[in-house]
Figure 1 (cartoon, rainbow, N blue to C red):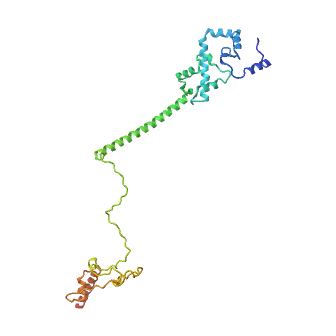
Figure 2 (tube, helix red, strand yellow):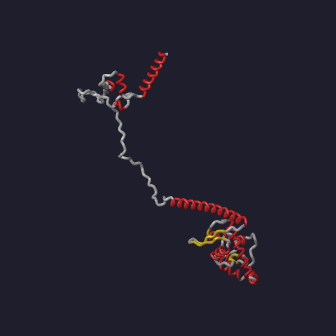
Figure 3 (cartoon, rainbow, N blue to C red):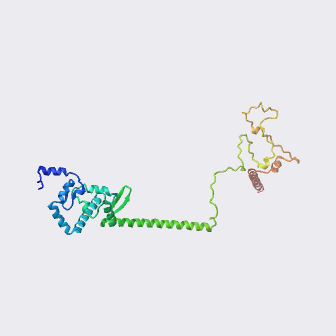
Length: 304
């Protein structure tokens, strides 16, 4: 039966029926013809054109299968590299996108029977990195172009230099730690326990500071040794006054309560002798020396 001419209703009907993907087992790669059912494929296999093509292929079947295999591998790897580059992806996902083209080279014409064997071949050839998981086979394309290799070499050289710097710094730090440990052992501090931090502690034996708001006697010009025997009244209340009836808000006058110092000389000397008997302060000593100098100057003037 002759083929329908292009543009005829029969040709359009056949195109509509063959729309989409058909069964792989009913595809003839030698004739590049897709049959819709088993009966159609049987009729095609018995046709004169198919038998003539099979005689040509049978003369050198190995070369034709090798050509089909190389073509399938080239198209598959080209799709993998352009679509996913070096990204890790499922092999079945790439194959489903590959067979969406109706005119693609089918796997039943190659040396690989299943997709698993083809993935293993890609891994052995170094074209892609292949690993098997519970979800299936995953592949990742290996870019072996000169530009990519140069870029990878530069990256490896940079990483090696960085690693060398880090290793050098780590070795230097280790040497410093070892040197410090040796010095510590030599100084005898290695066996000593590390100091324990203690918080602030209050010493109960220390002297306590006592604040007093009571009135103090007025300071005297004499030294503390001379002012010790003076009879000062430290009590502001009179002896005959009841302390319960006294006004606590009224402060006593310290200067009035201080009794005059009465010192009697057994020899009945004058006031100057009494003053000299007591130790003098620095101011009094300067005044007396100045008076002596004036008196000696007046004596010299009178003699002259």
